[in-house]
Amino acid sequence: MIGRFFTDTGQVRSHNEDAGGAYKNDKGQILAVVADGMGGHRAGDVASQLAVTILHNRWKETLSVESPDQAETWLKEAIHEVNQKILEHSHENEECRGMGTTVVVSICSESFVSVGHIGDSRVYLADSDGFRQITEDHSLVNELVRSGQISEDEAEHHPRKNVLLKALGTDEQVTADILTVEFEEDNRLLLCSDGLTNKVSGDELAEIADYEGDWENFGHNLIDLANDRGGEDNITLVIVHNTQAPEKEGVEEC
Image (cartoon, rainbow, N blue to C red; front, top):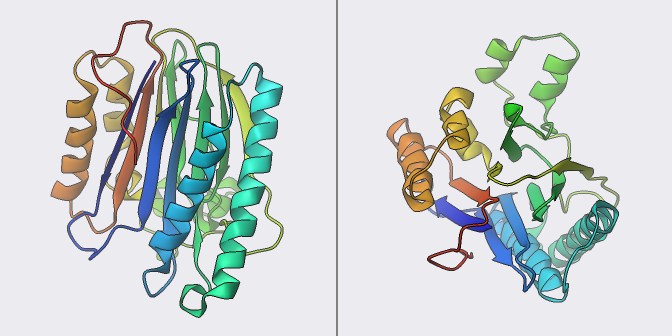
């Protein structure tokens, strides 16, 4: 299994509030994470990096994940811990008050993927059924689309597009969406922040389904595309490819 992590500050922001990584255990399973931080005084990058560090540390203590039930329990408990630690940090550090972060985190095995998420960072899956988004944005605009108040086209240019209904570190109690899907040989998973999806279309992202080249090139090409179209936000993605072929290089980490 191959995991690749990419992040870029973009063309406008002065610093990167995204964080993430792809971390492989001794069983060859991968923990993939993308977090998009928010908050003033650089606190967004504190929240997102704190989330990734906590998840990575828990993963290093996990020898293997044997079943979807075990994976989903792991995600629920880990995301709860992240939420509490971000809240504690913001209460103890005045400059971090009000900070928060989105998170998408996936446990990838050779037969299944379990995903936990909060916010509007996304996970896409390419399998025998095609290419599709498997997470639902926790955003005001997505709720307006779901309730039929606006169309998907209107959502693309809505003035409140960036308003989140859920984030980590902003409330004592927050419930992550958790799901499991099959992950067969040659399936591909894409995790990304909205800095990518706001600039690159679903059809362009879907090229991951049939790509046979170097994943380093694919990831950097997506970042270049988002930057060429303005790059107003930070851009972060993780690619996981369920392949039995031996890796030439190690997993990319944050």
